[in-house]
Image (cartoon, rainbow, N blue to C red):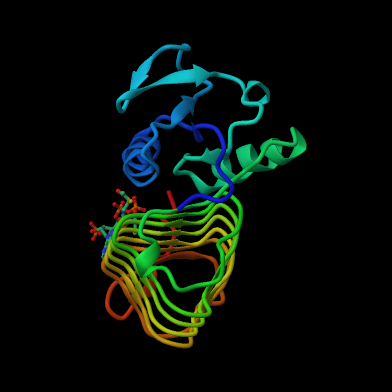
Length: 210
Ligand SMILES: CC(=O)SCCNC(=O)CCNC(=O)[C@H](O)C(C)(C)COP(=O)(O)OP(=O)(O)OC[C@H]1O[C@@H](n2cnc3c(N)ncnc32)[C@H](O)[C@@H]1OP(=O)(O)O
């Protein structure tokens, strides 16, 4: 499902994340998306389609999704898109598994992911393949919930948080902005200090001092 689509979706960013989304957009909408990428020549073949644009301001009326894995870059490009007046849309691969509020602009909910009732997904969020975001959660701007991660009910995650593959966040917890949760971690307490957390239960990794 795509918000208000009239011409092919343009995916900005032809890296691994973009290539994965292209296949899903094509399957769900029955129409191949096109790509924009500032580092590839126009006409470059990518994921069964081509790079049609290199500059954001050439995209025009195509609905846009920024498909750059880095949250900082995704945010920067999406904010530039707003300044250019572009239409930034969202994408939900499995509408029959999506029960939340409509996601914010530029957010993607990929194949097999479940988003349960009363969950709010902000802007530029990635809910990756097979992730579960349970009822009543709030997922902040430019977060990435990686494949297979489980966010239990009523969790609030602030902006720019990366929850690694197969990690679990227990119900009712709060996670502050700019946190990375390692693959397979189990978060059992709220996190109020930015940093990287790994293990079961998750503990903060102290930065290496050289
Ligand atoms: C579609 C997609 O592909 S989406 C992408 C999905 N990818 C992920 O989910 C990956 C998430 N990233 C991780 O888990 C990373 O390992 C991070 C962010 C937690 C840490 O990365 P780095 O800072 O580069 O740590 P680095 O690899 O140097 O490891 C440092 C130490 O932490 C340990 N460590 C790293 N990751 C983890 C983890 N997830 N759980 C437990 N320990 C870990 C390492 O074994 C190492 O221990 P050592 O010093 O005793 O040898």
